[in-house]
Length: 277
Length: 286
Image (cartoon, rainbow over all chains, first blue to last red; front, side):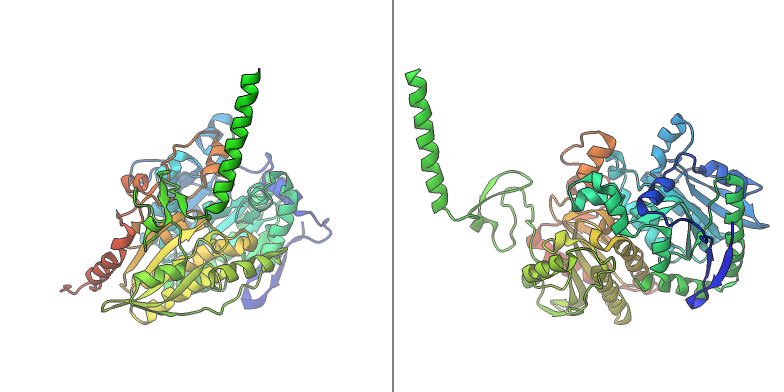
């Protein structure tokens, strides 16, 4: 796997690993992002961090396991970790609603982000979700409010927040953890306003046109990098250990850069990051 | 058999007569309230366009609302155009048609308004502009409204009505949620007041950003407020959802809005709330 650092406009670094690779269609990337062999959140945590303690609960009345939150060390630095996990066993997957966080999960993550701010820990978020949990119960618990609160509060959090989309990045449910300082995508991932199926059924009243929709939506890492929505693409070999090494290789220097910035500067950059759209 | 034939012909005659009568009746004279199903004579909706039976506020154009809500209004940012970032087929035509229909450049009207002595920044989303969906121009106009308000130390009042993010602008619509949130945060940190008034329907990315970020959140009676659409919930979860799940009453009961205000009371309520919330932290408000 070739990893190349290439300076881009604005001094940002992009890691490109796509030499000699066949150009894939958007439909193929969507399929790869949803692949069942994809690394799970729990495996990712155990590969990436030498120690990890999970923290539960939104301190209101609930705990939702679809976002795993906790504390860990990364390269000797204490960090707060948030991982949207689709689960492995059937039971696990049902408990986690197949990786669709309920409002309690977003409230828990915001609680942990606020705690990270208090103790000056950077936040690492890993996103793989088809979208926020679309159930009647989630509506009554205020799904919209939970995401809105995350977006509002994270805009002012004075510690670095770095997000990696490692599978699906579905709509507001993904954005709620991807509104920090940097967003990276792995090679086999997507990030979009809606699933291609939903998009096709809204616009063309035909969910079977999903592949066509994927093409128009520009949801591939390459297209999003070009549009400046993300910072870069991380190569994703099928071996999970190697994949995690790649993740660490990107996270470590970027986190170091971000932690050196004064908080005011960090917030100004975060604001500018979204102001340009 | 003859009797049946007779009935059949009579029935047909009857239908025919009805059809003629329908043609003589201009459309829109009688309306069914979508919330309480009551038939309403159009003149009974009155100036505010509300159901006399259940107080539901019918969907109205931004420019009509400005008429009865404010004492004066100066529009801003009416010339921004979408760059059509996805180069989406036929999107230009759709925008042009919506512009003609609403006399707006996108799904929100923004500007500086006055009610009595209170001057404030006002934004009103228009459900007639591609279902009030939030595109890049909508996001930009809301952001600029908050930036203007922060700079001029003014409160913001936003009327929301939206089907969510604009599909034709893809990920760039999604980014508006973060962009606006950042501007709302800056406004809030400057100690300024933001009032959001939710109107029918407010869903998706707008609910999940500025609609739910107000210091005070009001709603019109029976407005639909939600994140996921009804069909999405039913198709994904294979569960039938209750009719009132996303009704303002239910949302109020679950604690997500401060109050439901009838349309004729909005002007006075907003003026009163603006007056109540002009204090600054650390100073005793008079």
